[in-house]
Image (cartoon, rainbow over all chains, first blue to last red; front, side, top):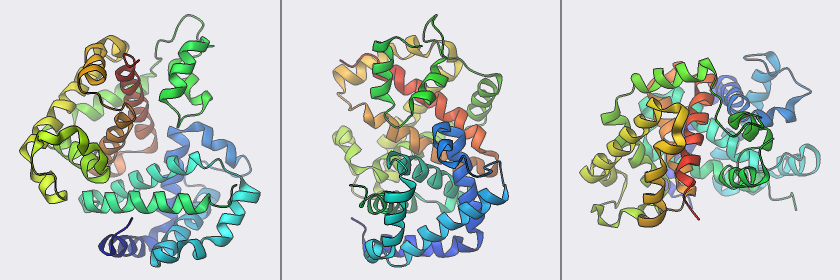
Length: 141
Length: 180
């Protein structure tokens, strides 16, 4: 459960990262491919070499979706409805991978924000990413 | 190919990893399950830990674990005030124990080719005496990764992260060995 303060903190952080969405997104994806090579199997149709055009554009898409959800966390199920359908019926990414990607997002944030990624921010963000992943997998079965 | 039993054990430990990742960590060798380290991985682990400020990374890692995953506080009932993030960050017992954990990791850094034996005693301690759910080892590993990332910034590349991830995964596996 996210407190009001945590929701505000999350919204604030993602709003500030929207200008660098493609950097954060591509960084997180690249980290995931390096630590969890099995995740690359979902991207055989893209060029996922470091900072490739595909990686930057895909990273940007993902981060913007995360940031959009952060604007009104109470409405996550509504905001993510189209993406729920996409992931459940088309992409069919095993939801276990959402945890791996979430961890890499947190690492990317830590690298980017340094000390500003305080323990409180870390806790709030971890909770938000878990909630996001849970909502995303709701239509799977 | 790993023998069925070993792979089964590893699978339980590494539920987040795919089979091909497990096999690449432990080495696809009929000869045994000795961990294969690349030159890059060895050098990276030595480098990351040699530059680390144990006195601050240790306390911050354990603090974050207790803050981000509050259920882990169950193991620290006698540590006093863990009421909120500020209390945890300022708690001297948390700080002291955080350093203990990190200095213990240093032993692994110095014995990368025999992590199994390095952590055999601690594995027994955690399973028999402390009764720590071994899934918690992953939580503290993740917190350590994030603290190191925040200290190293852009120098903590995806490749460095992957090397640290592998090292911590093998340490965690060694700590899980004596659980039954």
